[in-house]
Length: 101
Image 1 (cartoon, rainbow, N blue to C red):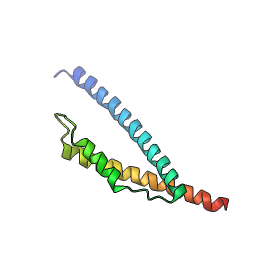
Image 2 (spheres, rainbow, N blue to C red):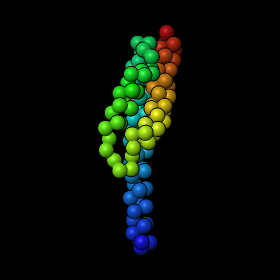
Image 3 (cartoon, one colour):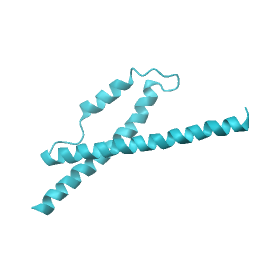
Image 4 (cartoon, rainbow, N blue to C red):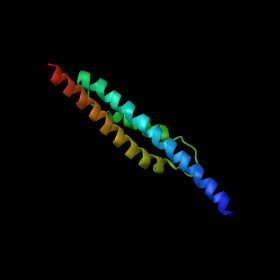
């Protein structure tokens, strides 16, 4: 394979990686906001049923390279990061309540 072609393909991968980071950042921001809303009413941040919905939705993905087990492993990490962001949002909401009292 020509080095120019390889470099072009790598450049495309770099662009996709940047987009993935941007999308993951947006996902974490949304999880943070959900945590803030849940913190206002004292709801638990973690909802195992919701996590199972996400895992279940991955089972129907058809991809040559992404098998359901691989996606589940990947999303386990993504969900863990989202849970952490949600807990931070709930904590920030509760801290704001305490400071305004």
